[in-house]
Length: 255
Image 1 (cartoon, rainbow, N blue to C red):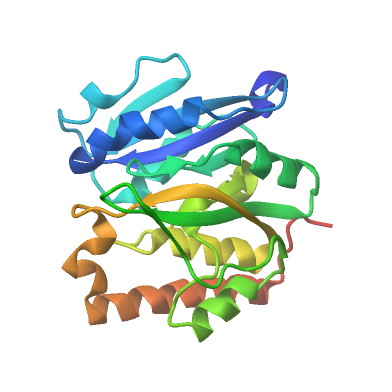
Image 2 (image 1 turned 60 degrees about the vertical axis):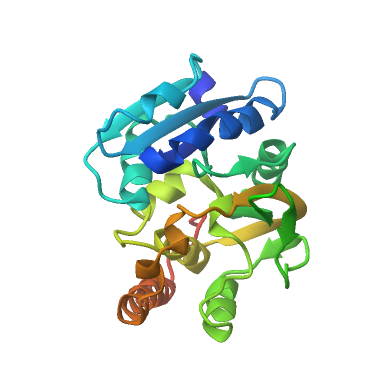
């Protein structure tokens, strides 16, 4: 990795036709970020499919890479986007969400300041259709999240993690070592979060880092997402992967 690339944060966005109209707002939230001197961001937008409705919303900016590919869901799109994600860190930004001011700098500072941390998350607010925001109950205190803590909380609280996977900031080499996002029709980001926490400590920022849009077309709002049989299967494989990784006792960082 060249010196320039080693000081880059790659923002990865999966997008499909219905969510493409929100890309300009996501881009605005990214443009308003700041990073320490010598650091830069690069935005990789990966369409989940090969349609004609996304490209018109992609900004004309040399810091933005747009790719298309075979449809397979957001996890597949994000993972294939890693082929174009040359940088030390990867930040998730869903197409319909927005970054809160200063979040990239805060995430970067947390991981640059402690090599023992593999990933970071932030407080998230639901962004409602009328523009208002709603917080999540039960945010943890700001600070480190020990290995296994996410799985323990998730299992005890109806498959709800105490931190939001859509706010993830992660070391690229760790993300690649775990194979990217899980090959699931949904909950692929939760599966990755639990896998990361099975092998490494994380960080939670109590400052708002993400505005999570609630709208009629979002995947998590569809009936298939809450189908009991499929949901139980997703949760079972997510948990099994996390427990298998924990039992391997493979630590990050090694040594």
